[in-house]
Image (cartoon, rainbow, N blue to C red; front, side, top):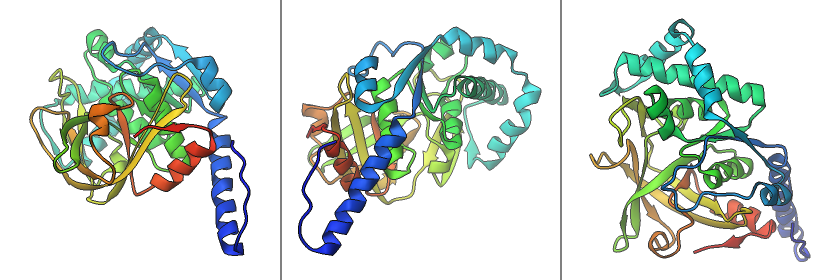
Length: 310
């Protein structure tokens, strides 16, 4: 971490010491984290790779490769009796249930239990999974499983994106908030806003949710979450040793429901120029956090010698 000299009024120095202490504590939290990598990254991701050794040296995190066969084997052993009650409770608490069938919900819950048991066995704090392979192999999506595991405190990311799952871990360490892993779906440079979307979000992150099916494949279970209008922060870490970052505050204007985008959709007006996503984005996925945490996240990454991309 970069040192600095503190000088001036007592109040400002105490405030700065508190900020530096929080940065140091967040860094210590990350140094104990184990990230599972279930399967390889999806082939269409533009930027997702991480050099395990360099990331370990810089941040102290461990990436652990896990075969998808381990997930499949556990999935096949879970019975409907083990998850039936929990599935019924999730359905009852939903604002609505649309395309997904009861059988789809049971299969999604079986996957949730299988992955959670695997995370407990491997002592994982977070994981990312090639969820599209699950659809091919077992006819279910990972959207609901990831949603519930994020609620359980095991941070979960889609498509085998290593950089995004680390971003979620770092954001949680600094802010205490669980992030929503998103794709930019529509971008307007004229109004400096964009629509962010994905087929999963933690149920505890939203006010209400609707049970849907997966957008790209029309199969399985996905979550359409309804966020409140409020301040938000968009964050992404990148680079093979995770030494670059983007961060911006913004305002969540409304929840949208376009038919040609993933299920959970939020329209966000950014406080920085949105053409970053067209000029020099750090990959496609970015993490949305409720509340304005731009300053705290910026201070954390600067203190750890990272380069800001704008």
